[in-house]
Image 1: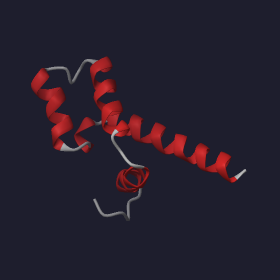
Image 2: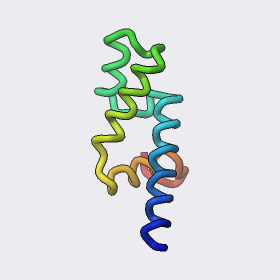
Image 3: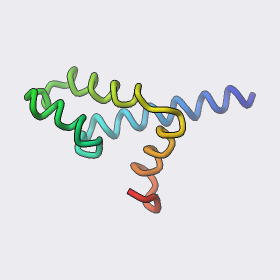
Length: 78
């Protein structure tokens, strides 16, 4: 049951991070924002989704949790 709970939490973190970054790419690191702005694909939803997915795919578990806290916890250090 613990593994199942952790898996459910992990999925929620990834889904919510994806949605937050997809909705506002300006909260992602500058190099990922730059990929979209310099290629002129910021309005292309498929390219934006790919860029967000690439960013999240490169995260470790620990980093994903920190990013989640930075994005969603008002008390977290930006």
